[in-house]
Length: 112
Length: 115
Image: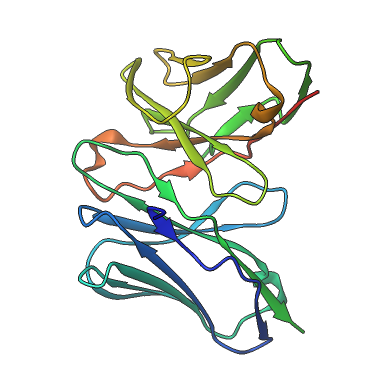
């Protein structure tokens, strides 16, 4: 079982729709959760971080965390073609370790 | 505010050679982590440097080594290159003293091709 799992996609949504990206993790000690966006050929760009259960909103992005279910998601409202990218979920166990464990990413395609 | 900078951006090496990649962390950050990202995969953790010492290491062979300098910049060295070492190498910087809620920011990466 992979430590962080994501559906590879592609997830295709029409422009203006809500895109929902999901991630599950196996280490119950995970305390910090991150979503990175990566355009083809570029490096990952941090878009959201979440540390406690519930929702965290930042502009068109909402991260949701459920530690009991070991599940974290990212919602993108009013999706734009410029949102088309691979979205990487990353988790960190903050017990002296600082390494991020990444999923393989979900490719999102927003159709104009 | 300078972000994370890496050099070079692209590199082509021959099997068996050695390579050194460089990273300068974001201003105010003191910790540098290195990741390897193969095509179609998520980044894989190589190691992390803080206070000029390797603090944590991922599942990579000893051919991968590193260094951190007093100004917090870092180098990643890979010896005896294999074709399988071809990947995007990413440097991430963070602030160790920021507690649990610390975020890591990536440089633009170095694309290494081994032929």
